[in-house]
Image 1 (tube, rainbow, N blue to C red):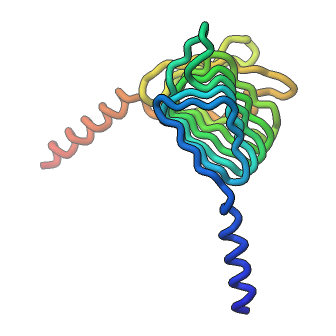
Image 2 (image 1 turned 180 degrees about the vertical axis):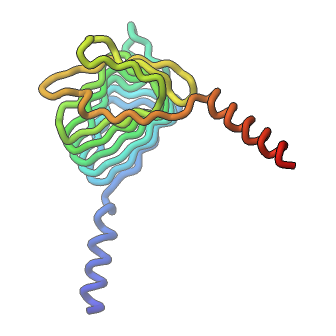
Image 3 (image 1 turned 90 degrees about the vertical axis):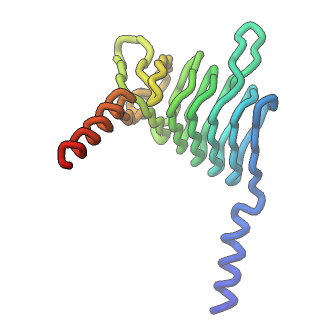
Length: 193
């Protein structure tokens, strides 16, 4: 029994043994970066051309360098997710994002200048914000506000499936609402004294 347990522990520990942790910071840049086999990715600045996530990989993008359209520099130009990967974007600038089979994209912030496309029914996009204005049949972009009060506008591409069916909207309280709730709580506390 001890031998079987030891072998099981070795197998479980080796599952991520070949994984690579990538860090992209201010001033860094990458051309094509493909994550696989439990690789992780953290971007706090810098720029890249093509980022692909697949094979149980995960990533967080906190920020990027600003995109310079004529120079095709800055930000990340193309992101593709697939194969049980998960990407969380909190800020930065992007041109095109394609969310593929069995993957998840969590959007908390950032600017998407080109388009967002969900190309498979087993892919999901979670958008965290408020004031969403989305008319799936009007052809206008999805608009709203991130939690920090920054406005966004995203062009959604409908291909073989309805991209809107794959988006889950998570409404977060507006910053002013949170301040008023806090002040109300202080007032109630003061009145109780």
